[in-house]
Length: 342
Image 1 (cartoon, helix red, strand yellow):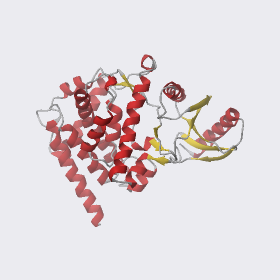
Image 2 (tube, helix red, strand yellow; image 1 turned 180 degrees about the vertical axis):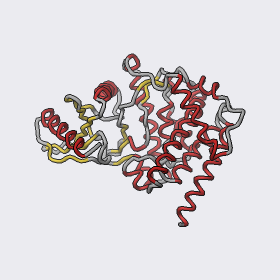
Image 3 (cartoon, helix red, strand yellow; image 1 turned 30 degrees about the vertical axis):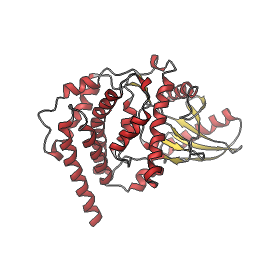
Image 4 (cartoon, one colour; image 1 turned 120 degrees about the vertical axis):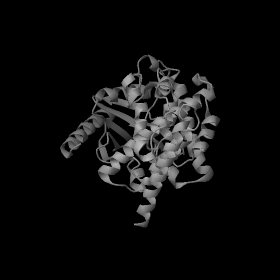
C-alpha cells in the first residue's frame, strides 16, 4: 500500500471512529507494521480499539458477523464493536503477541501458553457448533484444483531431498483430505494471530479467512508455524489433553487427519520461506516475530522440517516422505551453521 493510499485509509478510519464512538481519536498506531489492515486507536476517553479496513469490504463484514456470532458463546476472540461502512471496530485483546511471548519463556510456562492456545481453538470450534455459521460460510479447499495444488506441492522437496518415493500415493492422500466441511475453522492460526491481555488471558484474532473444513487445520496452522518453538510430540500431548470429542471425530482419526494435513501444510510454509529468502535474503528472528513475518530464517526452516518429518511418520499414507523432510532439515541446518560462522 502506497503512502497516499495509507493516508486515505487513515482518514476513512478516523472519520468512521469519531462518528461511531462520538469522541475524538487521540492517537493512531500500527503495531503490526505499516500497510496492515488493522490500526490501534486510542480514543479521547482512553479506550483502545482496533479499526480494520480491508481491501475486500465483504471480508470485513463477514469477520464482523462471525465475531458477533461466536462472541455469544465464548470469550476467546475480540468483541466486535460495530461496523461503519467498510471499517470494523473490535476490542484490543492484548499487547503481547503469542509468537513473541512464547519465545521468551521455556519449560512449564511455554507449555502453559501452548495449552492456552490449543484450548482456545477447541472452544472457538465448540462455540461455532452452537450457531448457524455452517449454513453460510464458504467451504475452504473444496475444489479439485486446490487439492491437486496442495498435495502436488510435495514435488517441491524433490531437488533438496533426493526425490519422492514411488510408494507415495497422492490420490489416497487427496481422498482423505477431501470433502471435509463439517466444522468451522478460523484459518491462519499462526501464533502471531493470538495475543495475551494484562490478566494473562489469551485470545485469537484475525478471522477474515474463516470458513468450513475438518477443524484440525487450525491446529495445523499453529504447529506448522515455523516460529512455533515446541517439539511436535509435545504438541500432540497438548492436543490429546485438550481434545473435545463433541467435534464429531474419534481422537485417533482426528490425529491421523491432522498428521496428513500438516505434512503438506509444512511444504507450503517451506515454499514461502525459500521464495522470500531468495527475494529478501535471510531475516532476523527478532524482526520476524515483531512483524509477524514469514519465518525467513534457516533455523525456522529447519524447525518446520522437523515438524514435517515427525507428522509425516504418523500415517502410512505419508511415512515415506519423512526422509525428504529430514534431508531438507540437514540442508537448512547447514545454511544456518554457515551464516553463524561467517
